[in-house]
Length: 250
Image 1 (tube, rainbow, N blue to C red):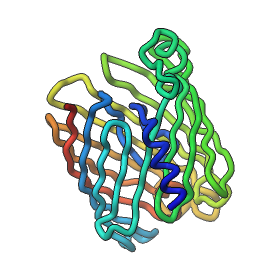
Image 2: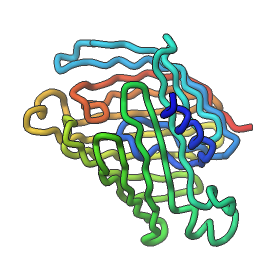
Image 3: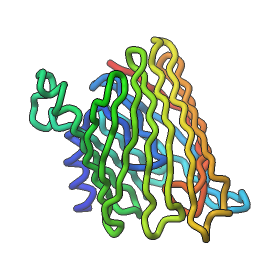
Image 4: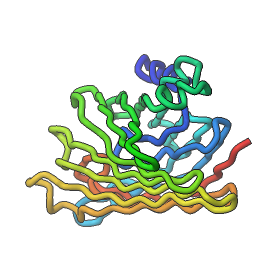
C-alpha cells in the first residue's frame, strides 16, 4: 500500500507525453490537459503453442495525464503518470519552459505483481522536425536500462517515433524496437499504428514470432484497439488485446 500511495502522489504531476518506459503498454498521448479516456478491454495471454493460458477483463480510465486500470475482479491494478520539468516548477507556459524545461520528462508506473519503475529523460531537438529522446529507466531488482530513439513530427499534431528498449538479465528478450505512429490531423478521425520487433535470447528465440502489431482507430469520441504482441514486456508469453472505449476532451 505504501508503494501504491507513493505512485498515486506522483500521479498528480502528470502531463501529456506518451508512456515511454514500458515496451508494449500504450497509455496514449492526450491532446489536452482536460482530456478523458475510458476503455474496456479483454487481454488474452498465450503460450508458445498459441494456447490461451489466461484471459482477463480490464477497465481503464485516463483523466488528464493520469492512467489507471483495474481488473474486473478488483484484485489487480495498473497506474501510470508523467510530467515534465516545466510543469514541476509551475512555469510550463514560459518561453524558457517551452524551449528547454518542457523537454525534460519524468514518468512513474506501478502494477500488481510487477516492480514499479521511474523514468527520467530528455527530448533533444536535432533539426526541424526531428528530435532525439534519450532516457534511463530504473526498476527495482532490474537496475537501470536505456530507452530512446528518434521522433519525427509532421502536420500539426502528429508524430512518428522509433524507440529502443534493452532487455534485463531475467527477460526473454535481449533487444526490442517499437515503431509508433500518432496521426491526429482530423477532427473526426485519429489513428495509432504501431509495430514492434523483439530479438529474443538464444534459449527463448523460437518461442514466438518476433513481429508484433497494434492499431487503434478513433471515430469522433470513440475508439477500437486491436493488438498482438510477442514476448509481452520481455516475458516468455505473448498477448492479444481487444479494447473499445471513449476518448474525449471537455
